[in-house]
Amino acid sequence: MKNLTDLEIIASVKRGNQTDYAIIIDRYKNKAFSLVKRILKNEMDAEEVLQDAFLRAFNGLNSFKQESKFSTWFYRIVYNTAISRVNSKKRKIENETASIDDFFNLESHLDIRTTENINFSSFITNMLEKIPSNYSALLNLFYINGMSCEEISEIMNISVSNVKVMLHRSRNALRDYILKNDLLKELI
Image (cartoon, rainbow, N blue to C red; front, side):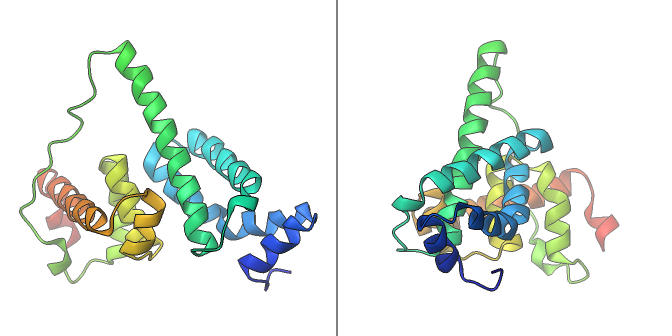
């Protein structure tokens, strides 16, 4: 059954073979967990949000219209569920503390792509924990999951041009972190 396409599995689940949904879970759990963990920066919360996202996707299978790939539709649910958790936590923290608005000051001075000796994917994976979650999520989708700006646009429910702007800002945040912490010397 594991050689079936997502659409074939979904059709089977819709016909009543609900246990086939486990194949979808196995297929997407690692990348989805990585995305959620990058956003929430907490493994236990990530596990809970991921379970919620899989449940939401299962309950919403009838609303999947196949206008995009299943993975795009599913990652949008995962992303939105994680962002909802971040927003609810943010509201809770804001009620308990004065402010969390000044998390990072972001500037850019260096193009990290010029450092040829760095395994870019591995480098991003390690550094994503150090930048704000919205930037981390975007870089994860683009570089780790290999999604296009158009797919990310669908997942995040923003325009392609906004994805490109956010991608630029995310790269800048990553570069700034590297510069502030003098990590470039260690990486070259």
